[in-house]
Image 1 (spheres, rainbow, N blue to C red):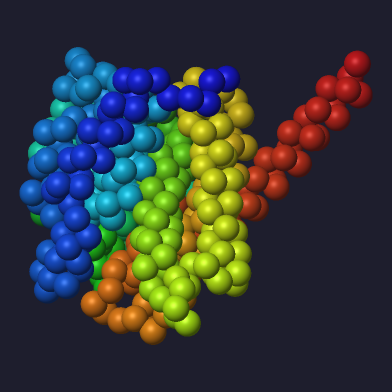
Image 2 (image 1 turned 180 degrees about the horizontal axis):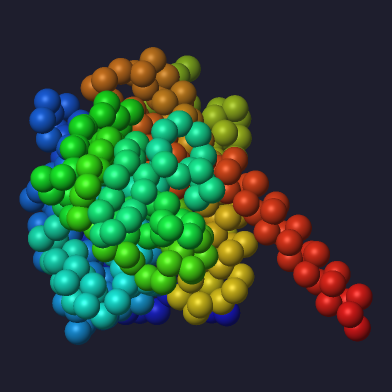
Length: 378
């Protein structure tokens, strides 16, 4: 396993960083957050499509760039670093990925070119209220080509034109794809991070199409969430790293008693602990990215550990950013709250860190039981 990215992959990352530095400063995120109507930045979304990011892993035959997941996670890291107010994670890492995983050739031809070009944004609708989303307790139903039920909250649901929906079919959970048209009532909800939206979707006999084989839906959903956890984890690492860098520069430039506050031991210890937290999460991410790109079975465990580590690193970075900025850290004018909002939003987007730790424990126990059974058989 090589933990060093290739020169071509580093070039892709640097190109993304340069573009976002020029076109997506923190003022862009703030502009959307402070807007009364906007829930994303259309110009930045168009730019991301023109750069090829939305179709990074989509095969060229479907209008994508035909690159790999290592390139995609590096782009995701830069999107997170910029706090880009676009539905990148939900459209690219969930909706597009679901169609790549389970879609028929006809569905791929219909949707992947539109998703890759940015013509339409996608989302993933699983939750049906507060608490952990569970395929065993679904109220939304799919029957006879139509979808009925309520999904809430739907992350980036205000911008999406198509949704991959988890519903109850005749024989268990199913994945379906539904265009968010006339038979779908959409309500934009108050979001803790207004630069990334939340929505309530009510399906009333909405036309929908089965995505993938019905009998394999539960396993497909699990695989999809594992894969998305790795990609979104890199978005969190990008945000955490940027928050750390800004905080470090601030403490180096703020003086007390004739010296930078960064020179005081209490500040140095907190910055060192935060840096270690981020780098440990990053190392988890490199392993998870390798498992994702190589199709290794270790992805099931790596995704859990990385998702929880990345969430905790970004949340800690945002909290320390506010604390170490002192009194101004709590003000609207400073950017600390932008990072805090995004950290909390992303932490909830695929399930909380505690939910992923529970998954990790359950999967490790199952793995140990399988190993014990094999040893007994010998």
